[in-house]
Image (tube, rainbow, N blue to C red):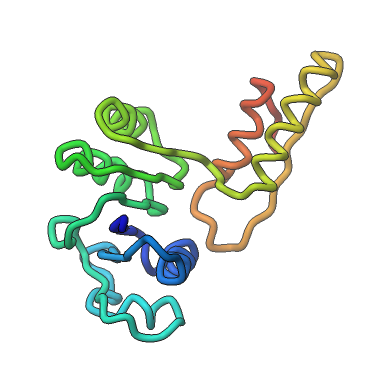
Length: 179
């Protein structure tokens, strides 16, 4: 059984991940993390996710985490970089969905990937990844004869703009204009 820890437990993805992990055979949620000063520390992670008590309290540090095999990180850039360093030191695998990392933070993630299994994507949705492939095909067919503009809209609590998904879409061709 794979033991999973997640960061950003109180966020939209964190709650979704808690629910998905608890509903999936062959995996076990062993740690749900939030920032150390969060009011969510100590709250039952199942209740936080809205699925009922699971007797696993939210904690504020990976140092306090029970044994885990994989850390799923949908947090913020500084936390993701620190978590990558922790995982490199402790031989833990990572799945990263955090976007907006700067060059030094990306370098830490790259260093972690040299010794540990790591998967990082700006978006894990099947439909979005299909759009990436379709955009790549369109860019190759249309060439430099067209201008491509990416426009996006998000909920008001979105931290990074443009989003990592939009940036990845722009990288398909190598240039883009933001609206």
